[in-house]
Image 1 (cartoon, helix red, strand yellow):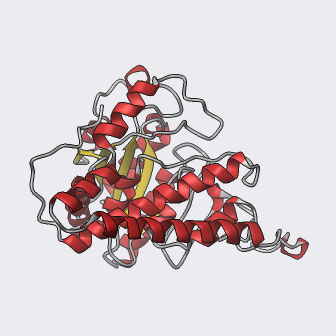
Image 2 (cartoon, one colour):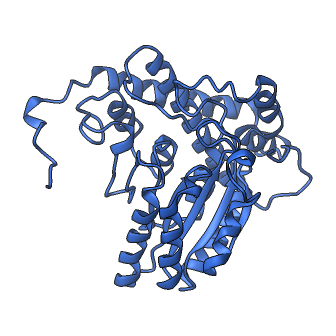
Length: 330
């Protein structure tokens, strides 16, 4: 289970950095809550995978990234989009299948991309993004541009054969790729201990000579620190690195999952002891970096951004028939 929120370790992080992490995680939380509401209203069709509870993972790693670094992930991707700076309105409009969406309303959550933000999806095939991420890193190594690729996948996808084929090639070619295992402990709905033989999944990289470590994924500062170490390793030309970030999602695998494979008490315990947003909130208040009024003002600002994104997604028109054959390359 995840580590408890209470900690005596003092942080050297500045007040502005803490506020930034708080704001970014809160934006993801409120956005996902709103997406859940729109799904319940029938405005978002298909499958909707929420990131609630896992916010510290992507916010911490984005804090370790530099301009030009790439990221690629699975279908639980809204948080990654927001953390790298993609427009909330464009993300929400894509979820509702509207023209104002980042893929013009034609793709949904699993087909959103941003060349400007170096975000390469959102992929619905379990584990398929892992070799694609290595391919992005191969391009960077070929161009010798000093960039790093963050390749995210889950504990369930870690059992896919293509993951280990990719580990082998990445190690052989010393690719600048960070394999981020977002271990939320349940894959789709099966606990890790019932589906995965390794207590620590990152150790599977040892067979290929890939170093790695586990990280408390509910602590944004721990994630950032581990991310900086991994980034430095890759930029130094030492090849890939594995981060197994142990986190926890509060909702089911998707909006259609009632999550009966775990108890409400278990979820509530994690919320009370390990919530990533509350951890930073307590650090801000106890360190006198912010007042309750300051944090209320941030919350109000974030709610306005999310509400505007939702309204934009409702008001944006359906994709035009003229768009049917655009953006097709084969």
